[in-house]
Length: 220
Image (tube, rainbow, N blue to C red; front, top):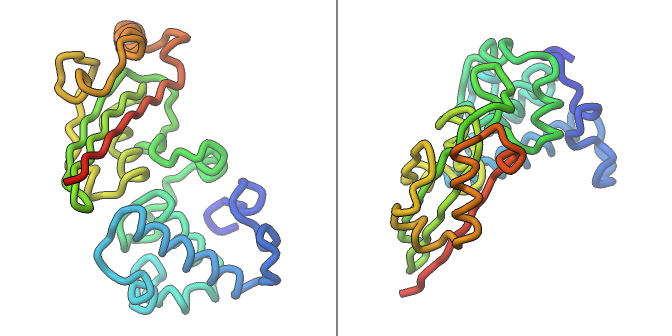
């Protein structure tokens, strides 16, 4: 494979997974179209994913998405760009920094945000984030806490889960502060004790893999 990834062997969708009877170019077109649409919904991108696929892009070496599926390398570049949230058009050579096992790790973890700067890290510190946003005629409040390498990883996860608009509204800070308004309102006493312990010792067993989220919505 041109970028060193086996989309079937790595755990990604395969031509037979949904029994669509598609092979080759048709399968690649279905995958790229689905991933493009999912990315636009996930990040609340205010433009048409169909139109995006019809315009020539650098990531496809000057071709449109519909034309790019004729080429395996261009197809892989577009899929990886969307999966990793690397903008809406990039130089495909940027993807050459990825190690050969990166796609497998991302596909199996289901956590694209943990890939930062070419390093998959399992060490880190406790970070907390708060989001308050007016949505759909009401207010949404989200508090998150996770043990990760840095703030960039936190924001990558938030963007993947809630979209770019809400991620940009997030307040992210190192450590846990129970006096923070959303923490005070949404975090139970028991969970607050766990977060305090994880903050003190992020390498402890109680902090391993910690990824906590609580939210509430108020209607007008």
